[in-house]
Image (tube, rainbow over all chains, first blue to last red):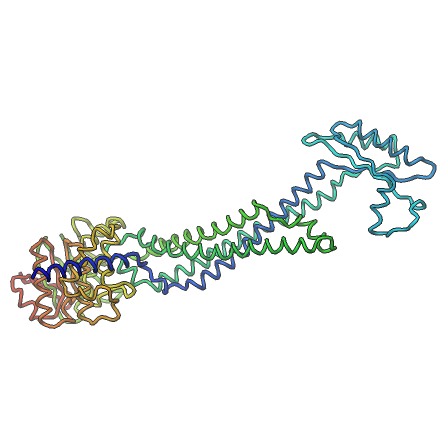
Length: 319
Length: 220
């Protein structure tokens, strides 16, 4: 009798332990939701969104570099003119530049240095003496101070007529406008990708709810609140969103790492230079990777929120 | 506890399937709801469960007018009721233990606080050895008992059971009826929808609500 009681007590404790192990089983069966397909869609969307965000960050960063370079450097070009001593004109222009407010340093390119700049196009061994090669003066401007470029341009026009002040502004403004357009376009693409992801999640949630309508009805009858049921669905979709976001975001980050390595190997080729002009050195940097991470997290959160919203709306129609 | 006044129900533009139902279910009362197939027994239970709304008349539940219920109150009222469905409505992906524990789990209770309660109840209905099994591998009688255990676990104020002995042998049916009667003595009002005259005869004192041609006849 006592032995039977002890056996029963042991059996009860064993059953309770076993029961406890299963307590966390989700109320919405994972198999009833086309989870793998949704994770794939979310991963692809996150990858595209991550690429877009990273590219926008690269272009924005390059554009910022261009703008800062125009703000700190200008060039004076002195063309040789028959009857004038070009060296004197160069020295005069350099003096005018040094005397201008906001100028930090002036560097005069020697004749040899100017010739060397042409070597990549004309080759070596040519008699440069016979060519009217312009001389260059690079003027560095002080940071955070507006230089009197209008005054310098006027002084050069008055005193060294064969000198031309080039502040690169037109070119850089064009490039900056282009870069700005690319960033705006990237943000628009990002928004479209997020909207498409939301719609995919909403459809998947509606499908999951239709497939689990019996379960939802039973949950209602046993006293589950709408919030509790929404939590069950939201938790499930948030997990799918996190998985898809991690896969897509990780793939985008790997893409940028590979692109950086590829760009390094491509340096000093015409194509590489072109890409470098647009995207800089293709180094995404911490802000870029944070942007990709932010997109992945945003997609995961969006997935959870959209599924909750869809569930809540649907539950309102079920009593 | 439950009050129906001139309640009628029709589907779409069809004729009324339930007409002028006026009755009350008092606390601690015991009643059988009976009538021929298709008389509307399950529909009447669904009206009490608030999964359907009447097309006319008034329904009061635990002192609330059901037409003016908000969602939170509705959830609160359902937590005071236990229900046994004719088709059991067990969740196939959960074990019997998890199915029976479901009403407590959705209330947000800690699993440790009800584990022994659930195990004990499963033992009581003869499913102690099947608590880790999943519903698809169980017999109809086992599912029936699990559904009853799920309804009883919250010690409801009102228990609604739709043909609760339809899939069990007479011996188990008697045992389940005794269980309902014990629960009734502990304070739960019971409504059992059944065709089983033999079952009703075992509890002569119970009130009988007989549905026929959409109307309700009460035999005290």
